[in-house]
Length: 286
Image (cartoon, rainbow, N blue to C red):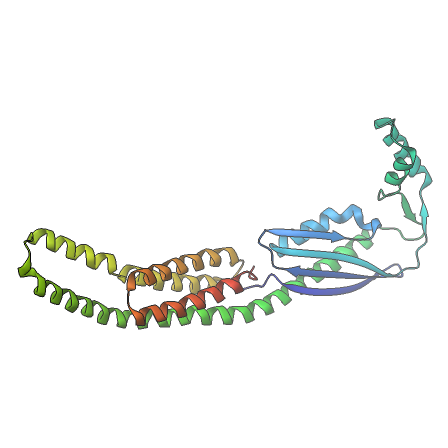
């Protein structure tokens, strides 16, 4: 089990320049919500960085940054490239204000160049290797967080299973009480009114089926067991566990609406509390 939350920082150097890779991950209801910020001279490999993150981090709100800590490089304006961009923009929109054209062109990634920093294949390999290392470190952080969450979540589900067993014992007493109450009611009133025996039997069967919680109790037990089985398999399981927890809550609510027994209702409240805590923790699970 992996958490969606995590943080890592990796430092590396290229041609006398010190950089830091900072990756911050938060939970997200979406798939992968990714934000990337890097120095302009790395923009041409942003798609490769994005591809690495998409493949390995899967879900979460990810903030990825590369910061330049110390540089010996000298940045100069690429006047030739700037003129080319200005000319192209004016050709497309000839009536636009020249100040706005200059403002737009100056923001393009290839306008400024380094006099002594050359981003070559060696540097690219160093950068992508550092990115990969940072991602692996974040995954380890997520795993550690996920392990702690898993212990809590399993305790909640096991608590529900324990209560379900208690309800099974209470259910037998409940049915016995209902039968005794119904038999007394029929005995005291059967001679005072006309009735159809077949209709009476049908109504009694309907009454007991409507109030029977055996099926819901069995399904609740099965859903809890399935939940724990999914956890054992590992991997990205957050969405699947959320769906199973909704099914667990549905069975708990049905038991509560059909039981009409104070002792069972008290245990329904306990189970609702446990599944709500489970759902809250699942918001952080990958």
